[in-house]
Image (cartoon, rainbow, N blue to C red; front, top):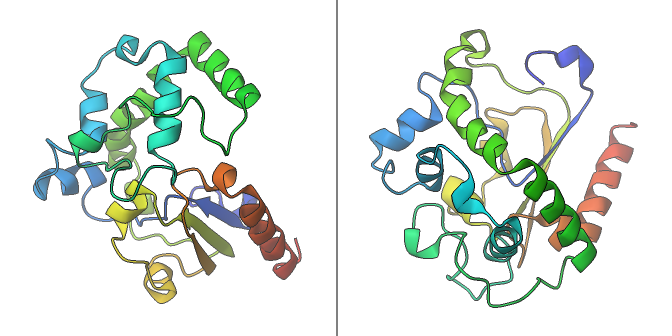
Length: 209
């Protein structure tokens, strides 16, 4: 969006809000605020291969469940609490909001390609920050919508209370609407597919896309 704004007419953001490129990287901010030994991504980056995340079927079943809105209140994934990590054994074979066929498809690709690309994404974030000085302070002005699950541990970390639209718009002035969905976690497009689809279609209608 920021590198080639001419190529993007609008933006739909799911689960993760846009954050502006500031003076310090996200990793440096986490370290300075005492989360280096707690935030989940630092531990994942310390693994130089993905063997500990295999077999994929076991890992993905746990991740799907604990990151969703399915667990009991205050037992789901918390990105800074190792006792509530995403790799705990799921109490269900498969969450009710996905199908066995979908899980098998995802497992197939992770068994084939592994988890290394995702881990490397975290490792590259500091380099990405260092090499994007030209984007410092840049804001997204294209019409946008932000959709998130209220039980998402990552959203609760980013904004412990539901964010006000005007606060989000301070760095994302193109944001038209933000939608927090009750009883939904990190996978709104799967846990509440109809709600997400309807919101996106309505948004596209409003911008005459």
